[in-house]
Length: 346
Image 1 (tube, rainbow, N blue to C red):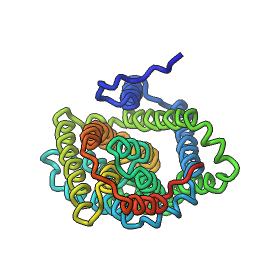
Image 2: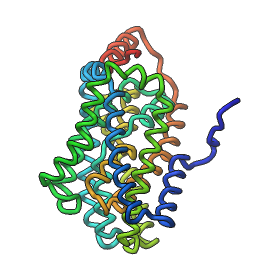
Image 3: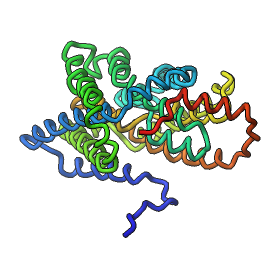
Image 4: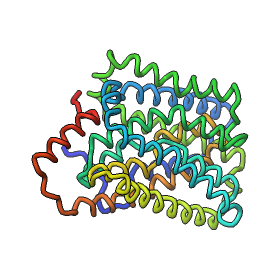
């Protein structure tokens, strides 16, 4: 029996549909009282488990090997943690014309989270780009984001993200960094199991994120934060995010060309450097924003769906580009690049 597949013509990611359904459930039946305490505890455990799995999946050896292609990875990291946040800070000028202050805080947080891994790899592969580079770039971004994103949030968001207090540091270490390091430490024993059961654990991943979303939006409903958002403000947010995505797609493509990267590397840089990870951002927002996480993650959820739809179109168009003739010298250079970006099996 064949597994049912989401129709290719459908523009909406099925997981986004589940996320929206979870938001709707939280709006109709928010967790209150004892139920809220149970949901909060389960959400905390789910976040820790998520980052444990991230640590168990990341091959330290391949990550270290990937450093040999350092120019590409530095470019992606600069786009993710320098250019994106600067554009986020610049959007402050749109308050209160297009954005409310809470939506601006959420948009700024969106610009601070790491890049994606799975979709960057998938789109790079479709566009016939440097897939090994995309794998390592996404992995490095996720690894750096565990430390860099909370620090940037503390520095740029200030009191709205809890501030850079001893309590916030303890939360970050206990819920994010410590589980990740535990996953890295136990990888030698459970790495094979994680690889063999990747699909099942992927469902656990997504189920955990749905729990985090339900908890965050339930708290938001109880606190009445949704009374602060109007349809006009949501429309303004979508316009701002569309411009942000267009700017980053242009910068990563033409900027990489200006830096002397070839076509395949430019594709990897564009897809890894222009996107933001919903899977990493949601748990971080839950830790950093607490009861205000629902509004904080709304811009990230919208941007995530937008980037998938736009990048899918770009990847298909790139796949139709004429393939340049490859010489023996080019093959040797590509072989060295693949070794430098950590293409090893297992």
